[in-house]
Length: 173
Image 1 (cartoon, rainbow, N blue to C red):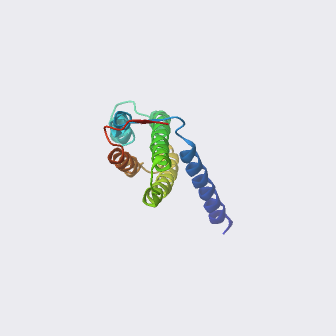
Image 2 (image 1 turned 180 degrees about the vertical axis):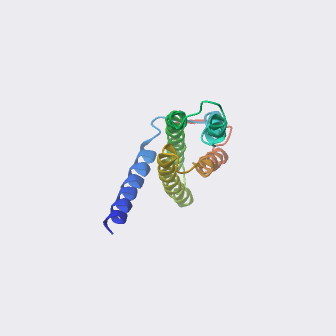
Image 3 (image 1 turned 90 degrees about the vertical axis):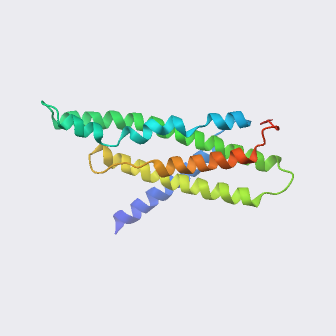
């Protein structure tokens, strides 16, 4: 009974940290259509293939294969994958910061944007926690890691932001 409670508290604490860090990311942003377009999901395409298992299957089929080789490959891939996750987290934080900038500079209150922002930040934080947990398990060969839903949340927010920033009105903050 104690283990599930500790796990729930740990996950809750982790979610709070992720939401706080996502909210704090951004700093000074040039909220322009060009800047938004530079935040493309194309940079995350390699990440989506990085842990797919085909390389491990190929490695296993080679003469002289040892389980130690598979472990080494998984460790290396996890390190690279974590780098991609950091970039994705930072880019998502920048998009969220741009949403906050738009809300602050809007002539009208935008509770709809605030609702979208909070919902997507929570979804992203939960998704990030799940990916981190599955990545830990992947490292030990227990399961795979699916990151498509996390990238999809980022892309949805980026596209929504793009529709809110008119091409004729560049804005710096």
